[in-house]
Length: 248
Image (cartoon, rainbow, N blue to C red; front, top):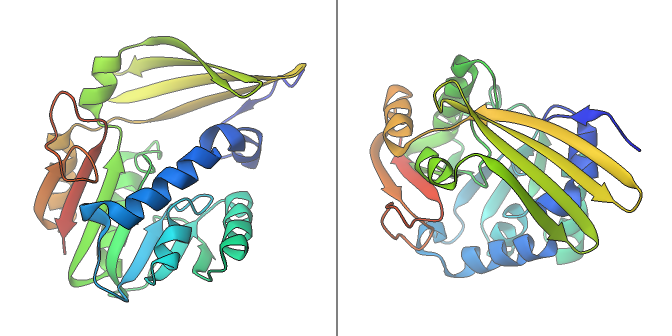
């Protein structure tokens, strides 16, 4: 039995839990969103930065739509998976291994995306603020940032506790615990695959819409809007996601 505990910072986490994090259904859903969702409709030929792109879930369909797409991630394992999917799809977005806090291509993009709750992982709040500033710097004046997260409001509604999720023959036990007055969340996973078990302990900041709006304004963004989905629905008690759109 594998008894080591993986975290966001270990490559083993991304490889051991890859099929759980990125099932084929997630790639299909992303392609449908890029094709149909109003918030993901950009002008033809737009220069798009997919920050923390992971396995290319959105990078591939964005490139297939004809956008000039760059995917950035600090995990070599995830970029390798993204490269494989790009080849299979016959698209060639630029893929870059880099830390989101330090990636710097000033004014190079019309749109910067940070999707699938890929924000708030750094333990120091200043590091998370640095990610926002770096993404703003990458935008041309008037460019657009889209942040897609599981908002604090949704996570509080879901509450603490353990859930059992089945992925094919795999079983995942996920236990979520709110920390520090609902400032952060700890998620402990046990993946049972055949006769082996894999463990992960993940912690990240939870943000409400109001908290993240203030952070975006402090980072120099303007015209911050909040939505409950890529279809532009309101962010309310029934919203499945929290999406913020801001301008440089």
